[in-house]
Image (cartoon, rainbow, N blue to C red; front, side):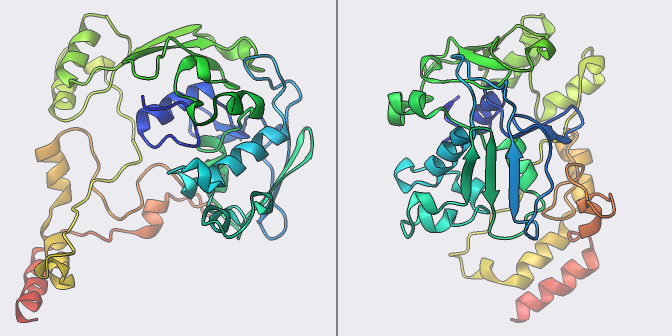
Length: 335
């Protein structure tokens, strides 16, 4: 874990921890559906889909007992847009009006499209209609308590003691460099009655074999398996314990654009046609991966109008076709 500062976290471990410690305007349920978080309901945007107006829960509190207010969201979003923060996740707020210009130093922070209309009324204005923005609000954008954050400045989120929570858990026993930490039930969380697990102890295990052995010996109750360990677990004693979840990631070939030959479009197409992705995941990877059909991952998002998976709407843009591979390769050779 690198940081508990949501405006700076770029690695998946930090972001996973942040999701336990913070809660945004929305959150997600067990099915991955966006549901109300600090906001009282999932709102319908106005102004052609560009303006969101939220009413915040009056019983939402930080783990020091202070109220979560609309100004906490204004402060957090401005802090992320501020070039002085040097956030590497400015893309998370790129849809918000003036965010990019502010981050480039061309406009002041006050011009960001976010306003506290009152202590519990918040308004966010986007550059244009953005259907996926509600997922940003549920998984990437969180409030910050200004007084507590500015107490530690750039060191905010660098240890458990320098982190304040408004989510179901508080962060404990993390030094900022250690490989272990604890999630402790946040008794100031508005939904504490639904937090049934009081304490979660986390340890970083860098070797997958070690992680599997710890799980097998009941030293840990949850671990992640990758590569050949997935196949071994699926056919061995851990078969009933194995649960496969989609990670919403793509693996891809990265071409060296500085190499003249590799910049040829026909060569790239030929290689793409020549890769049997179904065979690759089934016979080589054997880790329950899915064959990519496009840059849109499967099973994560659906078309709000039709209900169909976006992956289905996009279609198979990466078909395995030896005949086309050869024909395209010949065009490369003659070009």
